[in-house]
Length: 428
Ligand code: B12
Ligand code: SF4
Image (cartoon, rainbow, N blue to C red):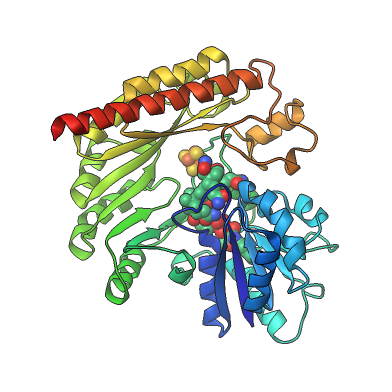
């Protein structure tokens, strides 16, 4: 069978594609099937997409979806479905399966971790079965009953390495995951919802052995090109013994620079120094709010501003570039709270930063809050998941207040760019 995954670019082409299909393509190829990825630009007309898909001649079409990709998927799925059955998966599909199966164009949705159910589905289709007569846990077929959820794969070292041709990687910059799941309870975060999906069924949080991670990197270096590693784990710095061991071994066995995402609360000076010595060049920290009240009461992140400032300083002192991510427009936030985030940013002084208007991802605790309190518009699932405009009607702040703050952040960014350019010119 030939499986075609459509990678739906939204506002821009990301440097790396969805990782889910890269794992599933490996599974399919191990079983003797073929798989390819068609990258779909955000403005490609539907008839061209249909023509490309028809030319690829799929037996099954897979679409991986974040909430932002969902609107585009609604346009594309009905157009390609006459060519082959369409199955959706990914974060958004897992937490909004009923909304997806209500729309035309989707034959099935894969809930949660995809490797085992996808393998079973391929086995079933390969012997002449159909999606309709499949009865596979985690694969919810249109019109059928909820399929139930199987436990996640207990030992993630057994999952085959990603099929890297599906990721569109360039110049030897490779993307890696060393774990699945995150133990923290942030109320706005979609990633941690997997824990709730598997509550009472199995443990979603699992880390690969160091040996598995290093041998994948050595394999890439020996067979292709390896110049830099981007670790995409939600929080690379949980499980300190693992991270210290990694920091000792990585320079000798791999010896290239790398970047990672971390939660500031997990950092300490020893860990920062160990990572810097191992080749860490860049850390992305989620700060989210400058208001300790909002972090503590709304986001379930009871860290102090003082601690954040300290971690940022120590990271920079160790020679690691820092990016901070901020959010605005969460329930309970006031205009003063949003300003506190900008004020904290000026104290943290990261090299780079991202600023996002809060969007309530389905399945999260804050999504439930918004739903219960009537903050969500009725047709929220048909609206784009944007990061520059709020879809919520909040009692404390208006959509205009949020847009004004977003514009203020844009001005902060412009000023930072001018400052950087000035510093670079002065250094010349
Ligand atoms: C790596 C990453 C990226 C990468 C790759 C994206 C991707 N989808 O893989 C890049 C850099 C492109 C990216 C960009 C963005 N991301 Co991002 N990203 C992640 C991150 C940290 C890891 C994803 C990952 O590697 N997962 C590992 C794989 C194995 O898991 P998986 O994706 O769930 O896939 C499994 C199953 O879902 C299933 N499956 C997946 N696809 C399919 C398809 C089919 C057909 C089937 C059958 C099964 C299946 O099988 C897979 C294997 O088990 C997650 C956090 C997280 N833990 O999920 C955030 C996350 C997915 N990103 C998020 C967001 C918000 C964004 C951005 C909007 C960022 C921004 N603010 O601009 C953009 C949007 C990208 C887009 N195109 O829409 C949110 C999405 C929330 C939501 N409900 O939509 C997450 C959950 C972060 C968060 N904490 O909330 N991101
Ligand atoms: S630490 Fe990051 S990945 Fe983990 S729950 Fe919080 S926001 Fe999500």
